[in-house]
Length: 65
Image (tube, rainbow, N blue to C red; front, side):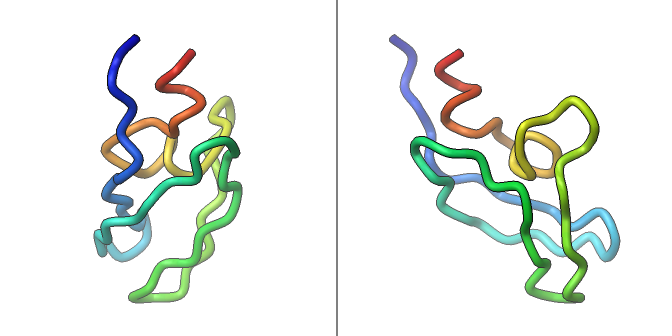
């Protein structure tokens, strides 16, 4: 079984600000507010969560799959 990463750097598509976050182990996060500009990110069509759409790593459930 591959090692699961729970830390990801999420980047705002509006202002470009990046921030390291801890991802939930067993669920998908469908809303995330940028800490810099306040933009509310939602998953892109076809993605289960904001980490799959805007971070450098897929969420843990997708890493497992």
